[in-house]
Length: 389
Image (cartoon, rainbow, N blue to C red):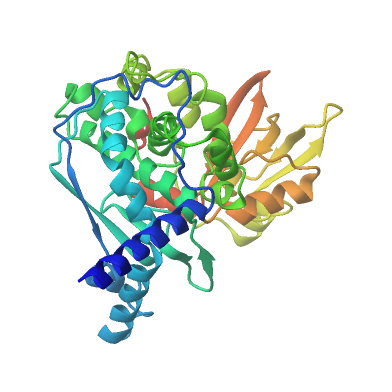
């Protein structure tokens, strides 16, 4: 009996040690201004379960990869071995995180229980519902990208929990239909994802060292999967000073449906489809020179890339770009010339879209450029008036 107890204690110490060494994991950071130890926390919080036996989810996401039950069970076992550090962290800090989310959002939890699905592969960075995280990789059609680990994964979990809490607003159970219909709660990298990020960051600042957070935010993986990061930094991170006294709901209520922030983050109004009966030579002439994107630029004396021509059949026209717009940044990055600009846009246009910061009539605007297929889907599903707020 004593031998088993000693083995168990050694195993537990090993797991805790591994967690502490994995990517600068939590080591009890709080600063002198933290309110976390003085504010009464909610007690009626959802219970949490980590689920690794995600047989149906794994098969539904990757039917071609998982040919039989054995391959699924094999990967389920690998998840069990791989992610003890995340579970240990959550056992220590989970209730604290859930309480902070409710206090800082101003939104009561409406669920009594939440499952966290840990999966070897996911096609995305994470999911709100079902709440799921990739443990080993983000599996695309032709390659597998390594999934974040350590503190990066823990922060992603906090963010997904924050988003899950905010999803309670879309059911109009709290705050009435005003919040349920608020444009900033629309799904997407520039609206809902930035709200969940604003809430998660304030929570994480109470329990994570600033250097750990900056390491996450400076990583290539973070920038690759967060196209709204620049917009977040310029319009949410410092403008929305979320606190227990002024929760996220307070700032959301101060944003009218037609506010500049709503306008900056809204998807482009879809255009009507082109008449397919046009003569072929006319179509060729109109789309010549701009390729798929359908616009041309020149560099100004101030270093901007100014749009000088728009192709009526290209993506630029469909996404609201106009002649005279001076492009400053693409997904937070500067482009040195026209070739580099087009390359940066084409590299991301078929993933999460491209967020362009430009000057129009000396005012900074934001344009979300989406692929034509997604614009056409929106046009078929919604009346164009649905995109006016």
